Image 1 (cartoon, rainbow, N blue to C red):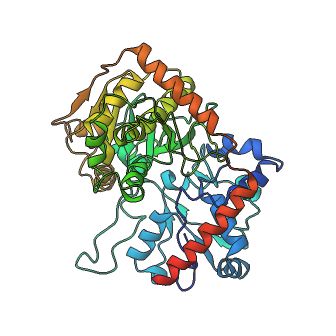
Image 2: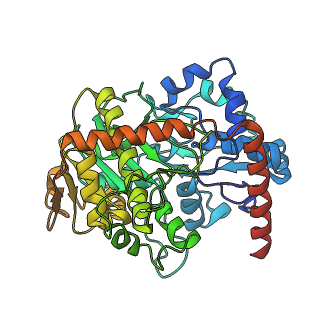
Amino acid sequence: MVWDVKTGEPLYNAIVWTDTRSAHIVRELKQKSGADELMGLCGLPLSTYPSSTKLLWMLSHVDKVKNAYAEGRLAFGTVDTWLVYKLNGGPDKNVFVTDPTNASRTMWMNIHTLKYDDKLISFFDLDVKTPKLHLPKIVPSSDAEAYGVLASTKLKGVKITGCLGDQSAALVGQNGFQPGRAKNTYGTGCFLLYNVGEKPVISTHGLLATVAYDFSSQGIPPVYALEGSIAVAGSSVKFLVNNLGFASESYEISDLASTVKDNGGCVFVTAFSGLFAPYWYDDVKGTIFGLTAYTEKGHIARATLEATCFQTKAILDSMEKDAGVKLEELAVDGGMSSSDLCMQTQADIIQIPVDRPKMRETTALGAAIAAGFAVKVWSSFDELKEVNAEGRFFFKPQMSKKRSDKLYKKWSQAVEMCRGWMDEEDQEEEYETEEGFEKEESGKL
């Protein structure tokens, strides 16, 4: 998000993580000297995923943003920064902060030092020294003072003491404090985090290096993770409901998938926003393979659920290669994890148990834990062992490894067959269409 540092007024609509309008900028940056050094510094590959390329797009296309930058009035922040800023009263208090888990998504923070890096910022030709661009201060995820206090409502004066990116919060909420613990959150997208301990692991297999949490204000060293992001998960289920009319509610898709014994030979590569980890393909589009005259809605529904499970396996395979350790079980949460069929399918495809808690709002729980540590509700991770431990269910693999491997091989074949569908000209036309739609929708507000 971007806003005027003097007035606090937003200068453009927020651009979400799945937005791919900056693909042409990414292609140009990949040809630039120093591009191959970025990942070793920030942990992220050059893609449309991080904030950096989205800001460059705004600076190229939005006059208000260009002018604010030229006049030194441009403030940038991820959503956490904006919320903390507004909750504190905006420009009057100007509490302008972020935490390392969120700052790690910009490509401007050095993953090793947890500070902004001049080399990274210079690569994107941004001026933060004059400054033309104002960036939030990076502070620990759990801190009793850094995030200020609520400026209004009945909670006026209450301190804000914790801040985590949603996926890091889910890892904390799943008690993922030990190296080797992993969780997967099945939401609109799907996000798998794997705790690698107190030193970052820079992936060579298509994953992100990220900060799991920073409780250093409480005397606990920052902890790192490998992350794999899937662009489309729950949103593919909504696609079947809202666009194709397969059901009236999202939860009914799992029931529909249960009406058939398998996918009937269908493979659905749900690449509505390209494919993220571990592929990083921006030239693919959603494609269904294997349709016949006997294909039913249930087959496509099952193939839709399987798409997320296959991508999760691809990420887990990469994590095992990067970390050198085979995962023994996977903790899960998020909306799609409520589907028994989806979670059993996941266990079958990855061939390890899937651990689902009874209470699945682990992202909110993780944020509460960060806030609680700052005010001494807890003082050690050992005190959290029984938090959300009741009612956990384990889905154990029921499919043979031979059958699982065969299905995954078909998925991998389908992914490669999708490549090259979108060329550069097609992508430019799509961005223009999306931008026009965005302006039309904005005018309705």
